Picture (cartoon, rainbow, N blue to C red):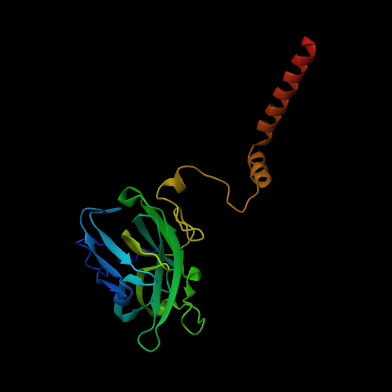
Amino acid sequence: EHSGWISSFEADASNDLQEWEAFFDPSADSLLTCGIDDTVSHEGLRSLLIQYDIGSQGWGTCGLMVPVAQDWSSAEGVSFAAASQPDVVVNLDVYTGFEGSRASYVYRLVLPGGGPARWSEITVGWDQLKRVEWEPDDTPFDPSRISGIAFGFEGLEGERIQGQLWIDEVRLVAAVGMDGAAIDGVPTPAGSATDHEAPPASQSGEEALGQTVRSLCPLSLGLILLIGFAACGFWFLRM
């Protein structure tokens, strides 16, 4: 796993990128703020708190924009911990290039409600990012030219969305598919993915059963058959 922190939000993390800023559309009666919360964290002592009130068809983001392009091509994605109140659709936005050549990419995910008592650990691979619909072309994402990253919200037509989102431990990862990764935009709540092992989702029940049978050694199979035959013999003698 790549150990490159983007933001841990801890006070003593001098190498972190810390300048997260709020952006929103005031013309759609929207408001968004973001800043450090020193009372809530997934690990450590602090996290980023985003409070949003997005009007119909409005938008708001909390973003980290950098003045010099960052080369994140040695990693394969980004991971973070998130807690939401209530459940909400969140955009992970990643930007490449600068004014005049900026390109925006997005990955949408659904976060369950529950607030700080229910953290989710999420991993998104670069290959899961898609160019936003309102930009003119589908240029492939280039992780060697990162100019920013953000968490964003889009207002629903005729409806407001309001709530709080906590973000912690934003970092680069070298491999995607770890426990807690977001699958089809729905994150696995932190911890539940490691409580027990289950067959991969692509396997059918017969394949999983076949795997279990093949994992038994020949001696174990022989004992199972012997016990079965003995039970059958006992049943016939009693008839």
